[in-house]
Length: 237
Image (cartoon, rainbow, N blue to C red; front, top):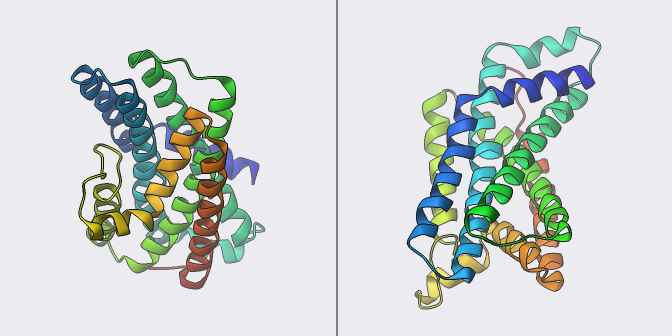
């Protein structure tokens, strides 16, 4: 398991999609949008939004492609003739991808806090790290489900866009929904990405009550995603 974990972690760090979608793009977004805003509250929300999107892009989208590629190469099918159990292999993959997502989140929080000139306490970093790991794990489990539904990369692109675009647009990652129509605020209330975003925001502001609510909801998402991944898992294409 340790070898699989280490190799997956090493491969993830070299992924060009990771570098662009989960590091360069979010950091560039924080830098660019903070230049046109002088509101500390907006900038802090922007930092939380970009961090959340970074983890979403990697642990849901990038990993879906990786899972499909492994299945098409027959990696999961070959596990039948190897001493490592499937659950151990999947756990190693999921753990490595979750840690990679956490690493991206910490980098963005660190650089972003310097860009918007705000000081984050160690408590805030620890709380944010916990919520990022829980959310990242849930997205990774969901990526197994997405890969099981897909026959090729085009299918994954369509499915992930159908999932992520509405999640982002019905959240307040970039704009306030205070004056939004009722149906938008209703969708926002049941938006799992918004729960993740609320968790990041509450960790940065040390709003413990909101943090506990967000963490509890995300744990429910992890459980549901795990059940979907297990029920739909396919060994071969």
